[in-house]
Every structure is written in C-alpha cells, then in structure tokens.
Image (cartoon, rainbow, N blue to C red; front, side, top):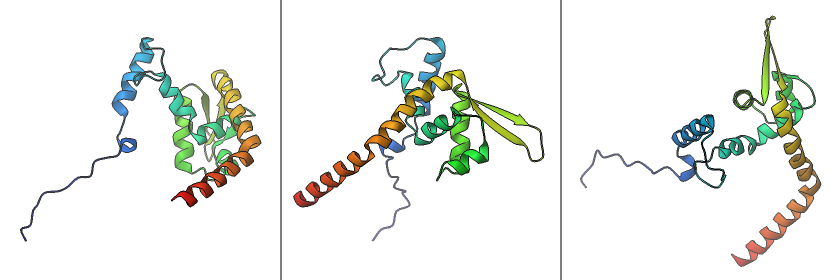
Length: 156
C-alpha cells in the first residue's frame, strides 16, 4: 500500500472558528456609531454586548459586585467552580466594557478590588432578574427536561 505524506486537516466546526475579524469590524463600527440597529444582523455591534452578558460568570460576577466591592479571591471563593483563569478573563472583559472598575492597592501582597460602575449597575439589575427567574422556575425546567427525556427515550 502506498504511503502518503499528506496531512489531512479536519474542518473546524462553526462554533470553533475564530471570530476575531467580525468582532473587530463590529467594534470599529460601534466606535464610529455607524451600525445597523438590528441585533439579528451579523455585523451588529449589539452582539458584542450580548456575547458578554450571555456568559454565566458575567451574570454571577455582576450580581455580586452590585452588592459591594469585592477582592479577586473573595469572588473566586464565593462563586463555586469559577477558576482563576475564568475570573481573570471575565473581570478584564467587564472592565474593558466599562461595567467594572479595578482598584490596585500597593500592599504586600498586592490587593485588587473590583467594583461595579454606574453603567454596570444598570446591567446588573437586568441580569439579576434572570437569576430570580432561574431560581423561581428551576423545578419547572427540570420537570420539562425529565418529561422530554422520557418521551425521546421511548421514540428512539
């Protein structure tokens, strides 16, 4: 059997394809204030904000920060499953978006405290409503999932 040195590359699924260029284009349009007012359009910068707030860590961090300023490790301890990497990435993104401020105090070790901004407070009220909805309806969702799973198990 002949051998080949050709390398076969798997195509990336749609979810794995990097989207830096479209995001960069949307961001530059947003900076100019020149974009379509349609979040369903691919190049609408509204999607940048929706990308941020659709993240569970963003929601949980904003809710906590709306209550009081928090130190970095306090936030990590308070939110189960939040890794240092994800906490750092999410907080940097929130800071960049103007939703959170970061205050560094030159102590040994360095103290870093995060606070919500007025803009972030307007969003935290909205995402807290989502949290309350989830708490109120998690039993209904679990029941619907069980019913769906039973139905699909009998039809397969």
